[in-house]
Length: 439
Image (cartoon, rainbow, N blue to C red; front, side, top):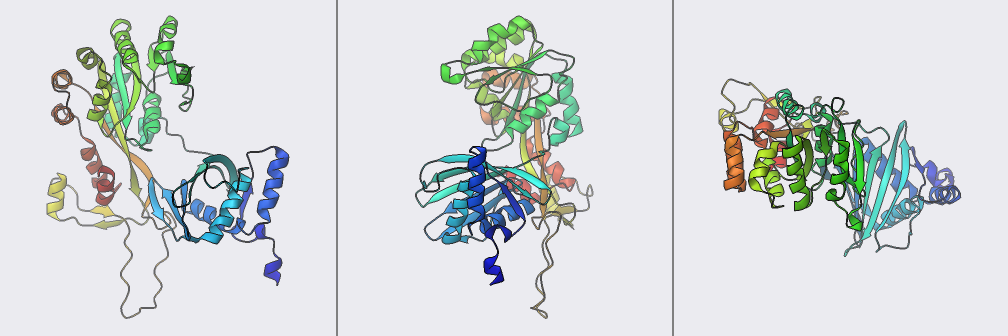
């Protein structure tokens, strides 16, 4: 009887919600109604579990009988035990209520925001729901109040020698510098910010051009002008006027058309500018081809290109529970690691097999550092391609993916896989994780 008399919001983990999306009075009324619903209990349980596991996104897939739950942790989706449909529906009603959305609408796309706190941790939750053929899909992005800033290639995880190579070029030579990363949350924004953050923005006048609806994070000492693509504007709209300010560096996150790229190449040639841009690509060779698809003058493009950086995020082994093992010589040979160079590699923690003489023995508790994931945090595999005469000739005469890759390798540039093997040899990550990332 005492349990039944306990208000719903007093049950479950100590998660506190903050309603958003309406006026102050609406938000307060929505929160009061949500706190009176039993759906607040599974909402608190799912959110507390996600925060404890360091998840940055929650995915809820509603079907006829159940609700599949998945957490994205360090870029990888992990399935959890599903919820029954009744509890899932009550939970969704609570989440839509505190986001000031239409609870009855299970088909239209709805977006909103609410906030939550667990103990001393505060987060903002970006909520999106959309009807599907089987029911409804909900994605909740968990944004911490203090998000760690990655503002340089050092923080991104690039090797010191590659950082020095990039800085030497970026701070001395005019030309085109390209940041690239795979599509679909591949870390392009992070790579882009790291590239600009690794340049000397205090000695040179830096100006940026961005599309108004796709703004990048603000970077210190880069003044940004915006254009509106919905009004037919483009990078070209601002380039002529911006040159009246005589900048030393132009920062253009996206060059989307031939006219803009042609103008950029002309400015590099006539004004000795350093121009930074970005493109989505699986490696540096593909990034070059993506820009060549805009049909610039190939020779002019090859002469202007100074550096292409491609990065790919990879999970780091948990330093607390990672397991060392002695690799067989055949594996080291396959990885290209000389015999005797290293004694051990590391892998994700594997629990010991159950004791047949003691079948009732409890399994060991999960590692408190990584929450039993075996991995904690991410770093980046970074490929830095600096064109030589051979690669420039290949861009003009043989602009094909494999030809560019081989020519870049002959020029002494390490491919992504080679950089990843270095991380494996250093014990930063595992072979299995490198295989997952490199496909």
